[in-house]
Image (cartoon, rainbow, N blue to C red; front, top):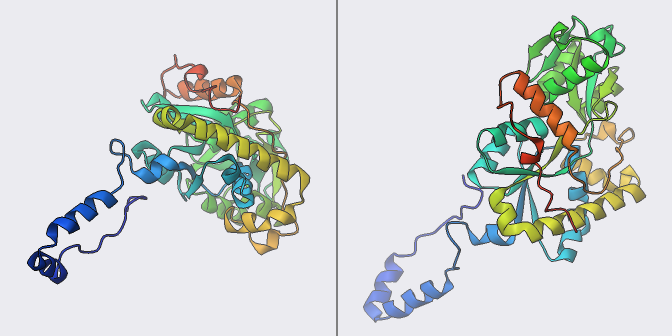
Length: 331
């Protein structure tokens, strides 16, 4: 169902017949005409007044979730709707069809869509870390142990990229890993904990849950000094809603400030309801250091482009500057 479809009841029936017979048809028609909202083009009016951002259960958008709960958006005179998706394919389809204005996405996905012809722009980076985790009793204690072990990945995605960067940082050839294609994150977690693979990549809260149950963090993109996720908007959204996007980032920064001043317990409702934390994690929940909205580092985007180009997945001549938009952060 379209996110913006509205249910309709029948407008004509026995009552309409009585209206016709009573000679009030003209009055009825005029009333209908003057109560229908006027929209520009084929974009629904609701979409014109609200900024729609596609998200998945991810710590990346936590500052926005906090800002929404605390009412910071209304203070700036704009409205943000966080549209939740539970698969990257659904999120990307909504982005491509215009059902959302933007999305929280990893750089690999953004580069692939941009290279495929979509008018897409990275407007900021995100801060939540992505972890490379080894399973209990796997014998993998550091990145150097990843050689010739089974690592669950989703091919050509952020997890694949992070595994390769972790191995390169340890002086290993990524081709030495025995990668196992597992697309669903919960299944990767189950295979790791069940011993079917020795390592995988996980975000919180699954990474934290794995640690509590005996798994070990081998590395993370933060440890590697890499930014890997960000917020994108379509060219149309930037053209039509740039002021709203700038105000969104004002509220984002207020959310960052809230997180820096308050303990995890004050946002447990968000972690549980939106991020997928279960009660077992209440005492162990951790927060990364969130920073004010900033542009994605061009060198990090360049690394992703080079990595995808090496696999012949994109045009090698694509530039990071083609994807990064510098006009949407607060001036």
